[in-house]
Length: 153
Image: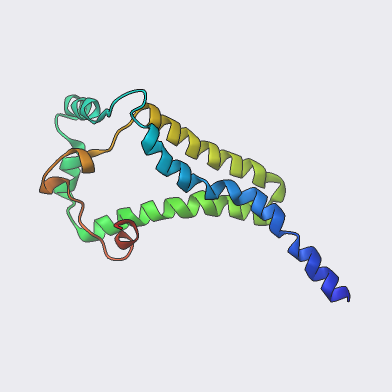
């Protein structure tokens, strides 16, 4: 009987964990919804930032960068960096929740505020980026090996 009671007490940890991490499940929804709001206040600003890059750097840094490193291994490294972004965004609050429960609320708050701030900036200042703005072969990102398949759906 005592073993049964101890498993019930352990089972109650599910609700605090759900309450702590439920907002993370809505991030994907809000990310998709930002496209509906982007351009609501201002139109796409790719032209403005492209001209600013041209004046500041004397060319397009994204195209120059792609010309110098058109390798699949480098693309794989960049895709891994992008993948690790998700590990950090969700893994750090999870580790706080497991090891430092008193600080986990603050960690979750900071990560969620960073995401929502990013969403707000994108809504106010919609920019697709050079991969989508520039046409032609020079704007195509080489595929990697493992991590590129996770993002090229």
